[in-house]
Image 1: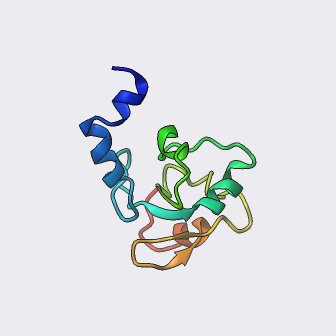
Image 2: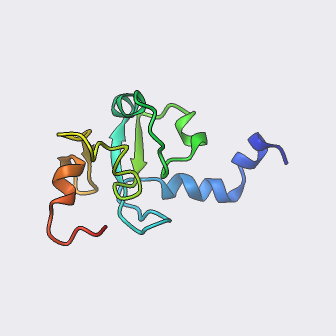
Length: 107
């Protein structure tokens, strides 16, 4: 099956659901957070590696994306004074510095 045909198979249908805010990252089990398309464009300016959003999803141009704050901490601005904004599953808007300073944050 070609690459486009593979995108519509059953695994990718489940992946769409998997990529939502609050769902566990398949790599590290951290709950995903949500970023807007505009924030994604700002994140991509310095061309970081984004590990938790497949290229096929990035190519679709969605309004919002689920991203893992642990696997993609540096893409979210961990090394900046203030990272890029994102929304947690509870609706709270924060950034990577605030999230990682919380008690119980795992690295």
